Length: 255
Image (cartoon, rainbow, N blue to C red; front, top):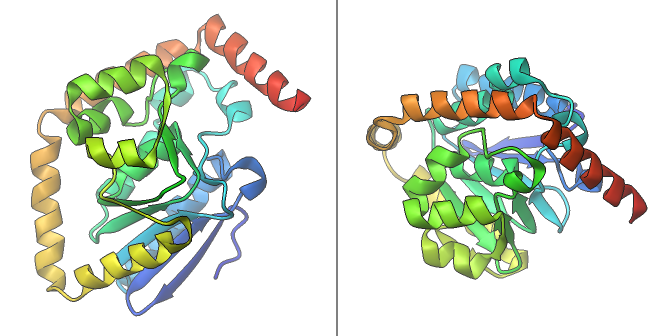
């Protein structure tokens, strides 16, 4: 598997499975996880042994419950412009092999943004999705305002992001956010079967097909991402962001 602090990974028969391993924090993305994911993904590309990758979360309660709010609260405009999470998700989207998010439990905020950066998404019946960032005084600033409209349409994306509501897997499948929904205990098996179907095809053909599909989807995105990053930088410096995130952390301590 691995000696990393926040992730586990395994590679067999050209298929990698990367597991977010902070179950006590609902697998929340922190700075360490970002660095470790960059490292392991760079290794996959450099070695050339991986032809497909599945991302999943440790435990039954979360794929990724969001970014680590304790760290996010203290990030500044400079941090937003460094594109800490956005750079990772761009890397996942641009990997030379297909990626599949196998989602159980909560898939919120940065977790939903990471899942959207994958090529395909398989969800458990009990999975929960959402982009609740506006409740914390920020926006889905790691690609969420760009990728969600491409998947579900602009109108639905506005409703999801502006309300910040959480919705179930059945709705996620109906609106096109996920490709398929399976029983909770079959998510990883379903993702593996989907990966095997891909691996049965020509490796170069799959790689170039993904390259072309991504190129079509990203037309005009660069300017959108620039505005998103600037908007997030402004929000990271706002007093309301700090107040709302502090209130969130204090509520969690009382539970």
